Image (cartoon, rainbow, N blue to C red):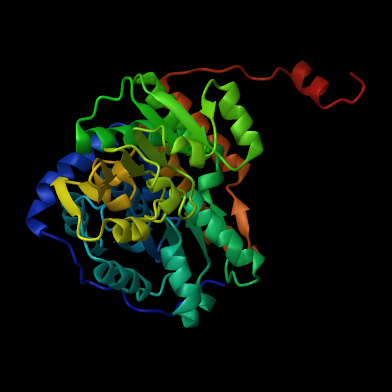
Length: 426
């Protein structure tokens, strides 16, 4: 049941500089040119107002693409507040532009952990009925610190692999209090966003931070899920010799058949010039691996949390031998002949040092978010507190709209073909 109680919409905000709004507005408009599916949904939402009066707490990377999602939710009538899902991913001019549009935003690039947590609390105080999460920090906070708000929540959506893993763990433990739509698992999300977005944007972040020549380097990619596939593919395309590490035998076999060297991290540690993690797990690169690495090896993370590289162990091993070489590039001195380089504080490098995924691919991801939110408003009261896939009809409609925007026509089944496919007789 949709609750009519909860906090009034907060008019406060916490951003770096409101005077940056004009710059943010121009960049949001530029991204919108590459987001035709979301634009069509915004127009539909403006006519139909499916989210009218619904309080929404949005925790996401505050980028130009997310801004277009937020404006779509606003057009649909949502009463939304926004916070960052990572301390380094906020684009401060975009945050300012959204505040100017009447959307309370709590996000500052480079905010410390205390500020990050305060911003999480700020959007929770909104008393959400729908939560749009990216990494499950807001939903985890609701389930631990603000259980009093759980009865008023219709449902939530989740953008990331990491977040879906956390939600499924909540469900398995019998603790999930409301339905979650796993937007990350939609075909029009993970096939495209995770593969064709993560690959180029991760490399973009690495190159902006380092100005590194990838050709001829040995690059180790930890994880061969959809994100790892995209990273490995793009690194190879730029001339790197790519090694893949995996724990899943099927994915490892796939990587081998895709032409990559596949081995354990224990073996790869001594070979790599560049390491990129994309697993959603903790301590994928650990103390034992640091000890084997070449002098000057570079470590980057493309997963959601800064836990994939064991930075605590690295700090212990380096003691006071640590310095910043350039923005988002830190050197750890482990001995007279061994220096290791960490990019972006071990946070997701594509947003820490660059601008994240191209708008064209986020068009589909955020179309899923918008339509999933509308689906929850309409059907959430009938759903059990479980993790659900995006309805196939939504997934296919987004693909259809994207093809239409690209000027691509596809075949349709004839009546004869329909009958053949539905017959067991052949």
